[in-house]
Length: 165
Image 1 (spheres, rainbow, N blue to C red):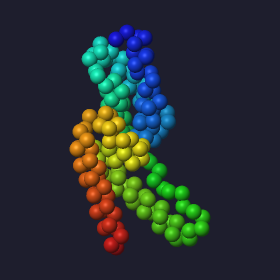
Image 2: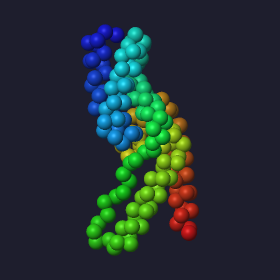
Image 3: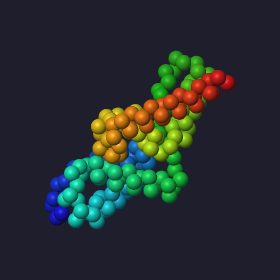
Image 4: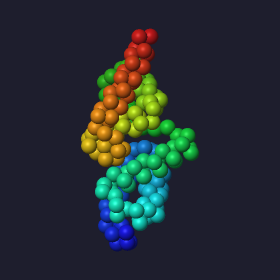
């Protein structure tokens, strides 16, 4: 693949790749660095790219793997803001309880297996459809439904344990 073809094919994905990277690492500078690393990895594979049917999905998979490598190196977890906007009319004790519950759910999500956490985040926080998740992860639609179901079930079971206290 020559330079012009590479630019035409992959540069339009920049914003989408950045959004995915930012969602995973929760840091603008690191997300941009990861996107640049992804483009470098794609460029280094340019001779193999002509045989790729879904270039966007391929780019997202390389990006995802680069993000996961980054997280493993930094031992970082997902620092996503789950706290809902709590109306001021709610009492202080209720506000504190809602924030504690949101933090507890965040911790439960962070404890999920990597694949469950990733699919759950893509589906519920990034708003991707099952088909888009399929393209990004390479999972079948059936696998995506099972993974989401297991993740939701685990969170629900763990959350109900705290409510029983």
